Amino acid sequence: MKIKKFHGASMPEAMAKVRSDFGADALILSSKVIKHGGFLGLFKKEMTEVVAGMDPDVRVERKKPQRPVPLPNAENNGGQQKILDELSHVKALLQKDAPGSHPLSPKMDQLARYLTSRGLKEEHVQNLLSSIDEKYEPLSRKEEIKKTAVEELTVMMEELPFGHVFQKRYVHLFGPTGVGKTTTLAKLAGDAVLNKGWTVGFITTDTYRIGAVEQLKTYAGILHAPVEVAYNMDDYRKAKENLKGVDLVFIDTAGRNYRNHTFIKDLQEIIDFEEEADHFLVLSLTSKYVDMQTIYENFSSLPLGKIIFTKEDETLTMADAVNLMLEKRLGAAYITNGQDVPDDIQTVSAGNIASRLMKGYTDEGSS
Image (cartoon, rainbow, N blue to C red; front, top):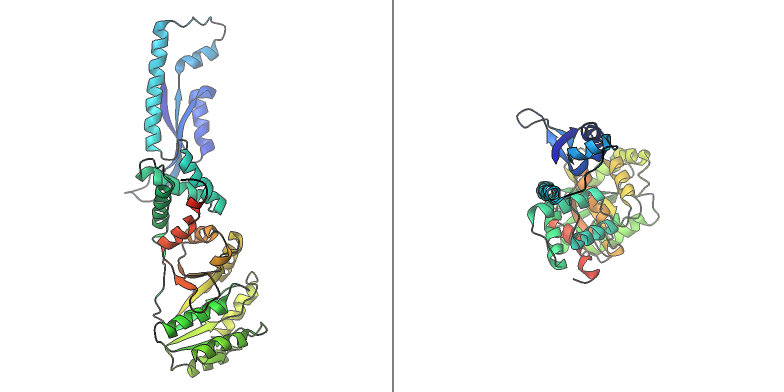
């Protein structure tokens, strides 16, 4: 058995080299993406590596089919068995060096199917399985698999910024219609007043939605907090001046169709983005990934910080939120899971995001 590694800029290019050298009888033993070249460890390029094997005798037989093939004897059988044994050993070594190239165990396949059914993208599922495969012995119990998956998902997100501590005086919330910005603002303000003993004030620029100002005034009345309404930049600056005596100022914005860039421009004409402020994008966990992605990209011209995810109580999964955070390298500050003010809001970390994603795993099927 002749075994050789082939490299190409893509899988088709690598396979073309395999066919050129070994022909149609090549056995593909493994394939993976590797880093290649570079200078002092820098500027390496991704390449596809294919390990293939070929028995030279097979090629000879295919080229000369008219030659009689001798009946196998004990000696030949022994040689063939030796080749097969060596091939099995090589495959085992290759599989050890290339995590994920071997078939999944039933339990790991079950984990993959669970995450995929929840909406986690295939590339993130594969990264998770490869990480588990590299670091752990084969796992069998569902609780053990769940714990390990939570740990590795946490590692995948650990470099993203999570949680929040108020260090700036102004807090802006942005987002599309119906995600619960005003209620979320009230929850944050309620926590500041009732649990931290701070004074707060509100500015609303939401003059489009019927009842929006009255809704905010209702929350403000409960907290004994002043409310200012801003129709333009001058109003906004006056409102800030009127609220200079409070510890925190929460700014509510109109929920609009922010797939339309005109509405982003409207925000910039009312709100001063040059000031020192915390800026949060509010997204509903009931939204589809493509909608979350579009909204984020349209808001990316603004100085956005972290995300606040709402309506956890209205969905079974937050996989699309995890997809967005991993692909855009975004962190999250809070998650809301109900209508109670100020109770139904929590700060989040990579660990509890991972736990939330995996919370239904052991409920599906037996352990």
